[in-house]
Length: 145
Image 1 (tube, one colour):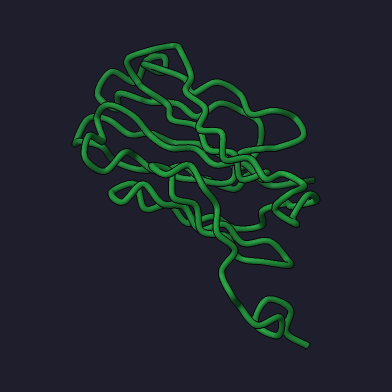
Image 2 (tube, rainbow, N blue to C red; image 1 turned 90 degrees about the horizontal axis):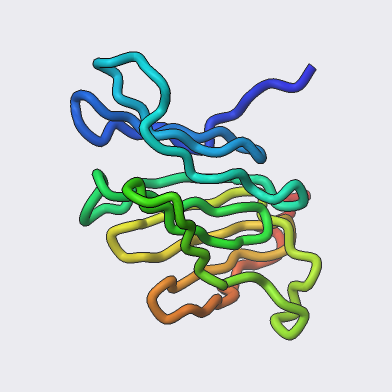
């Protein structure tokens, strides 16, 4: 049986928490005081690219969050809207990483940056500039013997 791993759980205020699992299920914004149904959902991830990580927007955590999937696609989730905003930073064959599958993600929402690691490379994504940069990491660091 497979367990559940959190992609992120963050307290936005004493009453509100946003939580998401690694996988295809949508993340949820919850009001802890009412213990009722979620206030908002992020929308599900695609079956071929499940969610890996979730982080609240730093400047306005009560307004939204960033979600990143295994293909290093980034979504802005606005808690006030059912519309999704995809930041098209998807890997492409021209980047030399056409078979890219993320294994770990770190999000710095205050700087709108994302670091994504796979078994072969480490990528840094600048969400404002809409570009990925492969960082020079020795192969022995990524795949120790």
